[in-house]
Image (cartoon, rainbow, N blue to C red; front, top):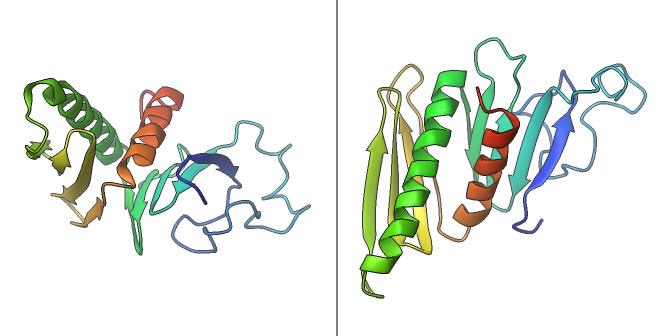
Length: 168
């Protein structure tokens, strides 16, 4: 898969953390089954975007953990509030990186941090290429990160998610 995000509804009954997500073009339930029938879920309730080294998901019908963030070899389901904070903080971080580009010398690196009561987000690198990381502060306590080459595609996916579901 390339770096361009792939956006595809997943049928109800599939599991974010299980199954062959590397083969996103294949349904996770047999064709013709109720879970796979597009007529049963015209809104495409569950969505996942995936690219090389990242995944981002949202299931508005999930009772406790409707969000998913994932990287190479790891995945964490998030509450709606955690995902909302994650999206907001990452978008703020990206905007700050862009705004800093004009005032930095070419060789200067940035180390930015932002947090809410639910999670911490950090970015380290140059305004046009930086690593991104997060740490959950509450409940399950988890952390993850994405290397600089993955971040631009992840940011596009986060932007798309925030436009599709503005009030997670």
